[in-house]
Every structure is written in C-alpha cells, then in structure tokens.
Length: 174
Image 1 (cartoon, one colour):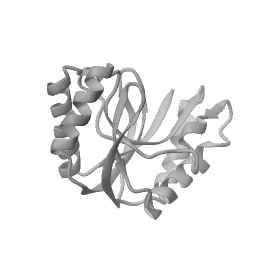
Image 2 (cartoon, rainbow, N blue to C red):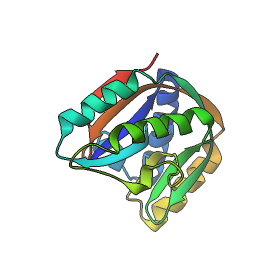
Image 3 (cartoon, rainbow, N blue to C red):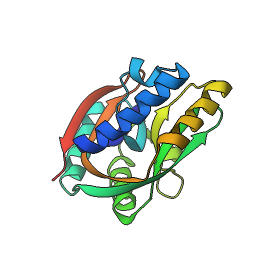
Image 4 (tube, one colour):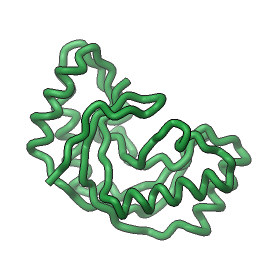
C-alpha cells in the first residue's frame, strides 16, 4: 500500500506533534511514535506494482500544485480505535485531492482505494490509533482540554509506504 499525503509547515507540524505527544503521554498508547508516523493528511491510497510509474505520474501532477492553507476545526473518531484532527474541506484541499486522484487513477496494475477519493473521503490527521476503549476516552478528554482551532499551511506532498511509515519521495510545494 502506498499513501499519497500532504505535509505541513514547521509550525503546524510542531503543533500537531505536540497534540500527538500529549495523547500518547496520557493514554500510554505510542503507536504513532513507534511507527514514525508524521502529521499528514492522506489524499490518495494506491496498491501498485508500478512504483516508478506512480512516482512519475505524481511528479507531473506536483508541478501543477502549490502550497495552501487549512483550518483545523475539530477532532473526531473512526471507532473503535482512531482519534483524528479534522480540517475544513476547503476548495484548495478538494482540488488538490482531485488532481492527485486523476494523476494515479489510470496507471496500469494500480488499484486506487475508494476511501480516499473525492466525495467519499473525510480529510483527517490521525493523532492516535489502535486505542483501547479506555484510551479513546482519555484521548478525547485530553483533546477537550487542549485543542483550539488553528490554521496551517500545506508545504509538501509525498508518496510513502506504510507500517512503518517510510517516505519514498517528497516534493516541496511553492
């Protein structure tokens, strides 16, 4: 599985990492830290035997993309085990997601996950995963006490392998 994800400016990255660390400290769940998962929003997920073709397609797509702003407004859960941070799905994020999905959808021997396609996708930054029921309650309580809406800037896009997270290629956006 390859994830195509967007990453943030240093200030936003630091702010999200702080939330992740606070949740890990309070719950004892360190999945995100152990697996070196950086703050990111996945905009497409693919299965492919053509890694080089996927990178080439993204290289062409990235030339058309630029940095953009997001507002993180809430937290949520994918029950029973994931707590996430949720941005507003604004025009910038929607158009970026559409462009990436168009770039990879017709690659040979490639399956695009339906869970990350426009109009069937919930943009999110995973803060903690593989939480127990008790850890989920503590994580929500932690966020209730510490979360305040904030803005961030998307500065990079990349393709990575999962479990553990390993960047294959990352492009700077201008």
